[in-house]
Structure formats: C-alpha cells, structure tokens
Amino acid sequence: MFDVVIIGAGVSGCAVARELSRYEVKALVVDKCEDVCCGTSKANSAIIHAGYDAPRDSLMAKLNVQGNERMEELSKELDFPFKRNGSLVVCMSEEDRPRLIELYERGLYNGVKGLKLLSREELLAMEPNIQETAVGALYAPTGGIVCPFELTIAFAENANRNGVEFRFDTEVKEILRDGDSWELITDKGDIRTRYVVNAAGVYADVFHNMVSSKKIHITPRRGDYCLFDKTAGSHVKRTIFQVPGKNGKGVLVTPTVHGNLLCGPTAIDIEDKEGVNTTQAGLSELVAKGQTTVKNLPMRQVITSFAGLRAHEDEHEFIIEEVEDAKGFVDVAGIESPGLSSAPAIGSMTAELLRDLMGLKEKADFVAERKGMLRPEELSIEERKALIKEKPAYGNIICRCEMISEGEIIDAIQRPLGAKSLDGVKRRTRAGMGRCQSGFCSPKTMEILARELSVDMSEITKSGGASKLIVSEIKKGI
Image 1 (cartoon, rainbow, N blue to C red):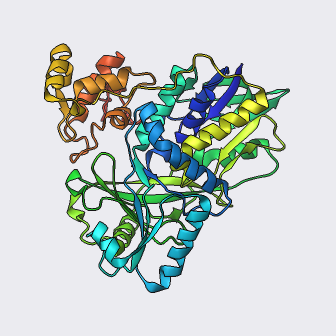
Image 2 (image 1 turned 90 degrees about the vertical axis):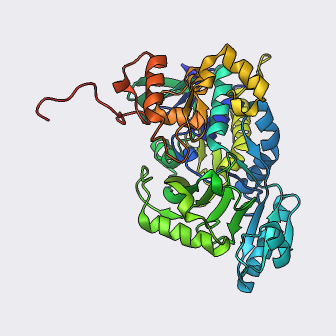
Image 3 (image 1 turned 120 degrees about the vertical axis):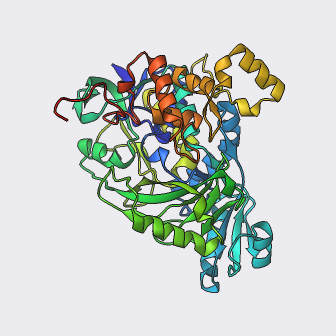
C-alpha cells in the first residue's frame, strides 16, 4: 500500500514527486513509457516564459511567475542548464500595437519584472536579424531557456534519491475506489494507494473521468518544430515571439541552451493522443510564420524536425485540486504552456495540498541537492587529461557531432533511473542529437547499452516497447 501514487513521469509528475519527497511519505510514480520525459515534456519549446501572456488572476499566471522566479536557483540546486536570455514579442504592424500594449499591461498586473516596450530602432539594435518591417516589441528580460529533458530528469533523480519509487512500462488501465483507498489496475498488476495524483498530460481527462461525474476534456494540440544546427545558434540571442493569436503565442524562434536554433510550434488540434507525426503542411506553415518576424532563417541548416502535443483543457486553465466527488484523487491536469515554466511551482502547490490533506511531516534528512552528469567539455585541458587517465572511457568519443564520450554514456546508464534505450541515452547525454542525428554513433551506443545492461543487442530499443532496431535471427521463409 502506497500513500501516494503519481500517474505520469513528465515534468509535472516529477516536479510533484520531488517536492513530495520532502515529507515522510511512501510515494510511487508510474508511467506507461520506458523512461521519464517521454510525453508532452520531451517535445516543446524549452522556454521559461516571463508570465505576461497568461490571463489575469489565473492559476497559470500565478504559477508561471513563481516558477520563473525559482528556476535560476533551482538550476544550481539540481544541476541542470538554464539561461535567462530574455524574450521579445515582435509587433509587425501598427494594427497589432494595441495587443502588444495589452500584453505589457497584463504582464505588469501579473507581477512580471523589467518589462519594457521597445521602439523599432531599439528592437533592431538588440536583434539585427528581425525583419526590418517590425514596428516595435515587448521586451521581457526575465524570459529564459532550459533543457526540458535535463530538468525533468533532475526532478526525478532527486525524488528517487529521497525515497520515491518509479515504475516504468506500467500502464494504468482502470482506477477503482476501494473503501478509503484507491486501486489502480495496471498491465503489470494492481497497485493500492491512499491518494492518487493525476499528472497524465493529454490522458489526464481519461483518468479524471474514470472517477468523477464532473467531466473534463483535453484536446491534444500538436506543434511542429524545426531544429537547426549549432552553426545557426547565434542567429538570434533572445527568444523571439509573435503577437499571440487565439491558439497561442504563435511561431517562435529561439536559441537553445545547447547552442542550436529552434523554430516552432504550430498549433493544430487533433484527436489522436499519440499523434506526434510531423506533416509537410505543418512544417511549411511554421517556416513561413517564423520568417515573418526573423529574416534569413538558415533553412539549409535544419538537422531534424519533430512534433509534440500540448494538453489543452477546454477552459484553458491549469486544474490543480482534489476532485470534489472523488476524495483522495488530486488532478494536475490541463498543464499546457506555460507548464514547463510553472513546473517548480506546480510541484510545490501539489505537494503542499497533499501535505495538508494527509497531515504529512517534513523529513529531517531531505537532500535538496542533486549532482548532474559529468560534462568533460566544461573541464580545463589539465582536468580533462587527468579524468581520461583515471577513466579512459572518457577519452573514447562515441558521438562525433556532439563530442560525447563512452564515459558519459556509461554514466547515463548507471545513474539512478538510468537510460535503457537509445533515446534514454540521447536525453541524458545528447549523443545522437547532432548533425548526423545518430547515423554514426547509434551502433556503438547500442553495444554499450547491451554491455552495461547485460542483455543481447537485439533487446536494445530506440524508445522502449516494440521499437527494437535489430533481430537476433532471420525468420525462416523471409
């Protein structure tokens, strides 16, 4: 019997797990995928929003500003990359200027610090590659960029260090009330718990509607992206937004914390909760829209495209509360943008709600710090030589595009909640994220995975499940 089971190992679920691990509680995170950060959290803009876009007096606005304010200190505490590079909302016509001023006034109301309306000349002085037809911009110096993989993994590893269990490849099929507790029926056996936290992303409405007569509805909103090579990473220094429309903040162009350039997303409502396929129409749309604000986008430097889903709840608001007619069931639902920015505050709010409901006591031995992976590129030449002398695997480069060593891949596999697939290694080390998109390094990475996990190479997958890359023998008759 668990005290709390969290459904979903995305950034919200892992943030809740980390903050909940401050208390004396027996907690479990379950996810149907093979790793953390396999749903909405793995494919997004990696933006830490300032907080001027969320509606006044909304939970979104409150948690966005709180999450943004906490991110820098949290990045030091949990050792993940974060950069406060600032953001610009570019206005391309005088007709749109009232909407820009509305964003400015809303941001002031929401408590966003340092906002400034820029003239065309001030804008072009800050970002020379903005289209010269721009008429002005809203500047938010508190905007930032982060790595969503490393943020989510940091939350999860720290939660696990403080006693939270994780079960992957475990799909919740049904949730039943059993007296004062809940029974989760999964494909790997039943799980009993006093409380349930529903942090299931685009599936949060499915689980909510199993237990409550007051239904909610979440629409998967697909967003297509293009990722550019690091040679294009300095095309803009800040995150460039467009004046938002009814479906969101429009297509952005932004540097990433790892030195790439990112363009996206589109906003296409679909029915398929697993519909992360890109389309030619979607990619063409985002390129055209991106070029309305940023000139000379180096399209020949695009190295990959991908799509992600946002969990758009009909009321466009975060739902973080105990369900009125299902006591002990806590929703963390409708977490779309600015969900990544809000994650630290979402975690704290939910953990404090559970603390009050359950009468939890703080741990005396909670460990707040987490040390991330060793990054040899951050060492001096002398330090790197000493590292390779002590651990020669750090001198064996596996991924040439990103210069990732065998030592880093071994670390990714052996860490708490370590990588079990090619994508798991990629999320932790960036091996396979470079220009060749794992064309060169994947066979050697598979060998290392097989060796470290003591399995045959035929068992190694791209992303868990049925995504095996080789077969152990040729089937007869083929």
